[in-house]
Length: 254
Image (cartoon, rainbow, N blue to C red):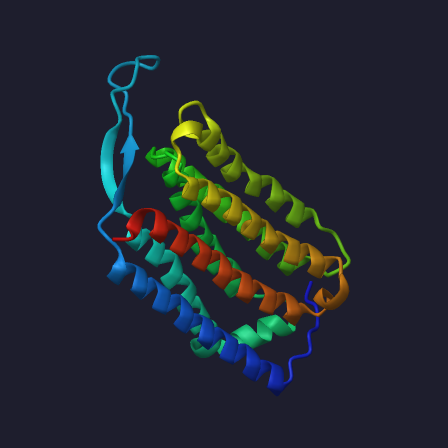
């Protein structure tokens, strides 16, 4: 169900500029993290059966070590690439979708970049099992895809069922991460920056949901779809920058 949005040349030019600026800012931060960071890594592990079901699994085996600097750079570079697509390569398609109250590029990018962010946050709290990390990535990506469904099939003022279903999925990674963060031992040993990341990114992730709720309840200036689009753009930069530099300060500096 498309929603008609008026995009004159002035607003289109501003959107193009915003996307190009965001592409540069995200890419520059990604390069800075890679260049300035140390070689800190976190293990991705797996435990395999060594007998019939019910047998105690073997001790966890390290499948590979994740270079945290590159993990941070990946979500920054993903954002840079998609802003470049929106601002240059696919600008006409981007403008056409916005005119219909949709932005598929946004949801595709978030499903990848935000899910990488969730995996990094989970690993910083001690979740290292490969299957758990894959599941957290998938659940978070699924949550974001419900945002795309909301835009594709509902009009502002209409049903919010896709939105609420996405919220149900979206809380799962935070419950899992929170459990590890406050579990006996972890609560005493986790450094302060990990708590800072958990709280700040939880608030930022929910701010994206708030923007969509404001859009679809047509609250104040968010009844204009493009106000919501610019809100998403700014929130994306702030959330990714906050995680990148909190991780850098806590683990990658020096």
